[in-house]
Amino acid sequence: MEYAGHLFVTFLILKNIIQKPVMRKPSVCVLIFAALLGVTAAAPAFASGSFSGRPPQPPAEPGAATKLDREQYGLGQKIYDGDVMTPGGGEVGPQKVRLLALQAKLPGDAAKTKNLVALAGKLSASQLAALEYFVAQRFAMKK
Image 1 (tube, rainbow, N blue to C red):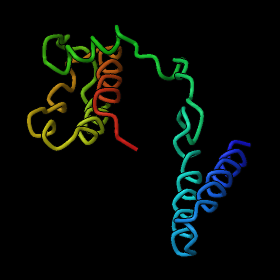
Image 2: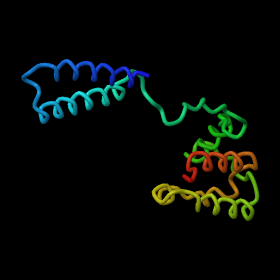
Image 3: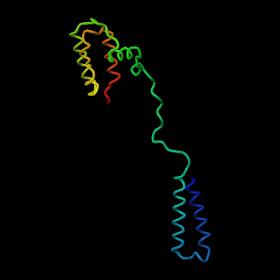
Image 4: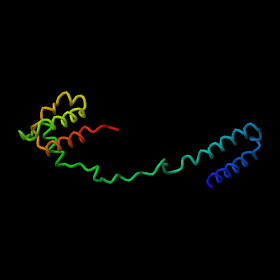
């Protein structure tokens, strides 16, 4: 509706200009008409407000899968740093296999500085689970 109003105003202005004797040359009239038409056509582009391609998404609800178990993460971090160990905590064979898998999940720079396989036989089952949880959360693979 605004566009039609702009065209009507342009028509009235053009009609008044053409009626003046100086403006009777066709090239001047066409030039003025084109300029006024361009101004009225661009007017809706400067309307207020912004346009969003898609509506904003609500924040994700933290579910059970996205919550971080702070206690297990903290214990795993302490074990990773070498602060907590239980000598004679478990069997070396099964722990070594799990620790080799964990060592392979570490990024290159962390794998050079940490030797998780050396912890085999020194961790209890809960400590090993906490270490696995820490490595999975701390060094998560980006998709």
